[in-house]
Image (cartoon, rainbow, N blue to C red; front, side, top):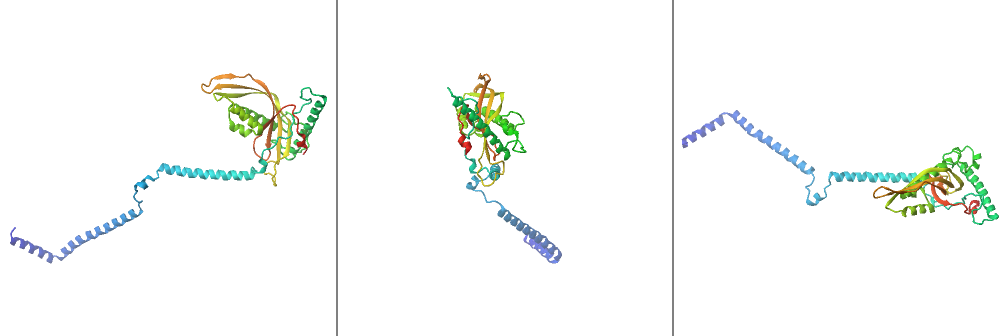
Length: 338
């Protein structure tokens, strides 16, 4: 293109711009408006980015990345918090329960064996004289009187388990050794037999938890010794084949053992100890722990035992076995008279 042609083109362009003002305004609007829209969008975008940056978490460094909590850890943490709260609630409930049932008091200290006696109408001594036989008869008669006194105390304070006594004055006071199902002490005999079977099964199975829960005193130590002297290579199973004669209570004592100022909210203030005569048939089977095969068994044989059961009547607890007595033992009547 020549210089002249170029000038001509420029003149045409200048005349067209100066002559058409409306067109120039349209172009200017077309050029300016999109620019303003772009600026507004850009500013809004920058504002959003600033807000997002401000609300976003700081970038994780290597130290923070090591401490990041995974969802599984968060779940474990929440579960641990729930468990700790549940444990605290259980502890509070246990404290309230102990406060309501008076389980935390000086009356919970171990008790001495009372003046229990295995009755016999003749002395068990070798070469016993007439005086020895008379003493045995006297002790049996006094034991009978003390049984009546203990039953009267229990009936008066409504401490006979499982029986609603209308009046403490009843012919039942003279039926301590009765094995009838209507006797006042029938529930006690049933509970004592159940504890007897559970303890023997636990000793054979080396279940120290059950033995500790259902025994006390010297008898507890004797049962635990039997458990720990067993051969760990074998498993013993105690079998109960029934009673030759029904178990019966031959001696019973009841004294006040709760020393709180206020009356206990549960039960009475009495502590009851009783001598129960068990006459049963039982056997033991032995199995190999490794193979499970039976390696030995004993034939059912009769076993007669005089065991002392005890219960604090202000506790909601089972009868426990605490001592073993034998025929011919002298009774401590001085304790009963005090």
